Amino acid sequence: MDAKLITFPSFGDKSNGLLTFTESCNEIPFDIKRVFWINYTPENTLRGKHAHKLTDLVLVANVGSVEVTVTSKTNLTQTYILNEPNIGLYIPKNHWHTMTFSANSSLLVFASEIYNETDYVRNFDEFLQ
Ligand code: TYD
Image 1 (cartoon, rainbow, N blue to C red):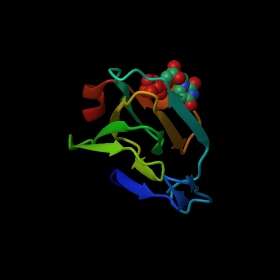
Image 2: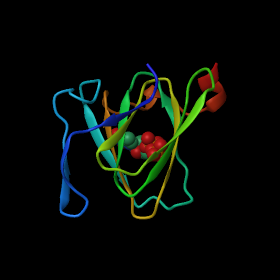
Image 3: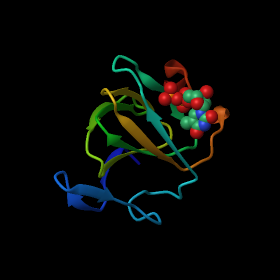
Image 4: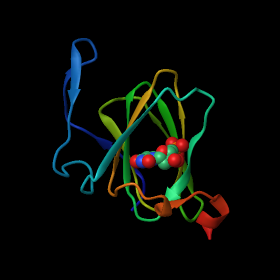
């Protein structure tokens, strides 16, 4: 499966408060085993720079804006700007991804597997092989 944007159900609006939710695999195409979030990343810092062998991810820029670049095994690259709290980006396993962050942003990540360093591929040439 390719990377794709997901729209979560939400109530309210930007003037009066927006509540966004997801439950029981309705929007996220896997059982969630792990949730983590990333804050305080400086604007000039490139994060990610890896692929996962088994883990699928969904990323949500909960606050601010996060630019995500996703590269497939066939070296096709697509860039996504996440800047709405009700929009997520599904990144399947075996996809290289990098992220840059706007000031004061927060990235919320749902993962299909618990953390395991052996699940990471951190070398791009090795990833393409
Ligand atoms: P990493 O995934 O390399 O972050 P990024 O690609 O955004 O720079 O993780 C950074 C460190 O945090 C790494 O040493 C592993 C640790 N970590 C965990 O212990 N548990 C987790 O769920 C995650 C995502 C990272």
